[in-house]
Image (cartoon, rainbow, N blue to C red; front, side):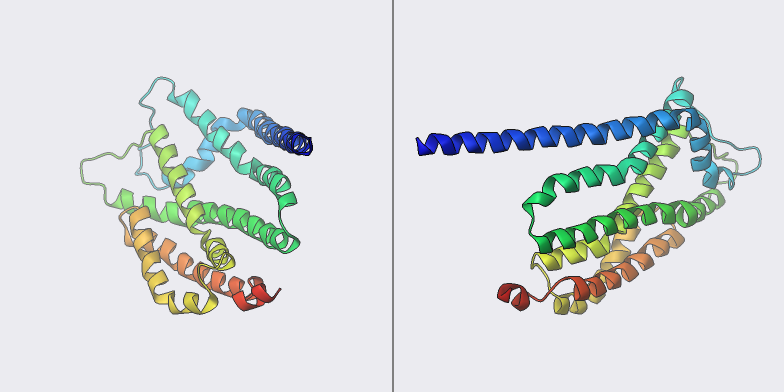
Length: 251
């Protein structure tokens, strides 16, 4: 009888967690949909702002083109959906945090809150860095390298895919401090190892930037140097946020 009562309690707890998860997922989805509906009237304007770094550096008379029939309508809507996800991300992360935070210890909750906020801000910072600094430098290089007799006219869908890939890549690369703190928090590395691995981290930063960025030295440097600085920021964060393993074991 005791076993059956225990099973009933477990099923009730699981069912309540599933209901909470459904509620929070619905809240996140509704937030994205509301932001999407609010941005739809500005879809073409959003795309014009996104295309500004390339349009400003195209040769005189050149412009973006649409090679598919529905591209002038579908592509701005696709950008609007990406923008709604971008804007709604704080609410999405909050719903995720509210669901999992009850199962964490107080110290874990404190560290997780800091990491979530830092991850969100760093991702936004990486996207802004790509838009305002990297994309203009990249398009300046690409337009300068266009062979004589070739007119550069980029398809609007291909341009959107390229820019979204750059945003995602730079946003992830700017998460280096968060990744360093997580590795230290779970015990994979410690402060001494991070300091000793500094030179390898810098080499890895240049290797990653060379793989991600377009084939010009300016874009590679614009990504590699911030990654190196962010690694140093991660080392400083580990020093302040993560206690040494001996201290954690004693606690």
